[in-house]
Length: 362
Image (cartoon, rainbow, N blue to C red; front, side, top):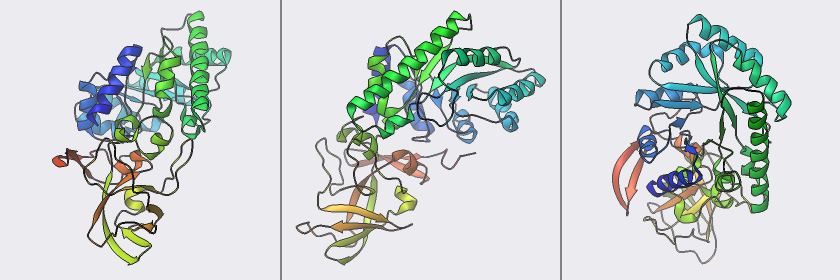
């Protein structure tokens, strides 16, 4: 984990962009402190509940790349008393309501306009002319300070090849660069240009020198089976595994672990060649730089508290009480399913890792 934190900070420094990690992956102020110590400009949070936890822990620059609603204005105003806060808008009616609320409170809040660069979730269309009109309208609203534009190439998680991943990164760069240039030509304020997704991070920083001012990867701190399948890291980069116990061995071809869907979540893995099942099973309890999953063990099915593993012929016997490690498909969800993780180094438990923002989804 420390190496992942350091490596991302170094890549951002070389690319001359600010690094603002998304904390929804780890939900831990301790990990956020390590990222900021390594050079991160601040953090991102998914929801106000997360932001409240991190600000209370001392983080002083929080961005929510999420369309907050004016009904939560009292919470935003309270957070602004303690930290720099910014969030996204992609709807003029919502922006106008925020303007009314902030102006009535005699406050200003920083906002960025979300651009839809292909994921088709939130954001305005990436047409430069219409985007500039939207930016100009937001910039004119009292109580708001237009801070920039922001994108998330979430469709990178569905890329089928390295070439497709690069194409996604290039398309995001081109769309954001065109809007930023059009905004400058329209004499709008100097804009931040923020992007972020772990799978496309290395490609985005390669193809977009001078385009982005900020990058917001999140999953890189742990990596997982999906980002491994997308070539974002190698197996030795994967920092988070689940320590599981064999609780039943009812047949030679089947064992059951104690890490069901309430531990591993039910996400399937994605990647250039998607991996079947719900995680890779490691026999070794102490990670190594050359570790590989046991090829005879296939985590095929999850119930709430059970993980059913098919055991191929030729596998070494597993008995109730034996322990294994599981590399999950999606580390971010696993973080949100437990109150505490453990920091381990060279097989030795160092410290507990409280997941203080667990469940803070409002």
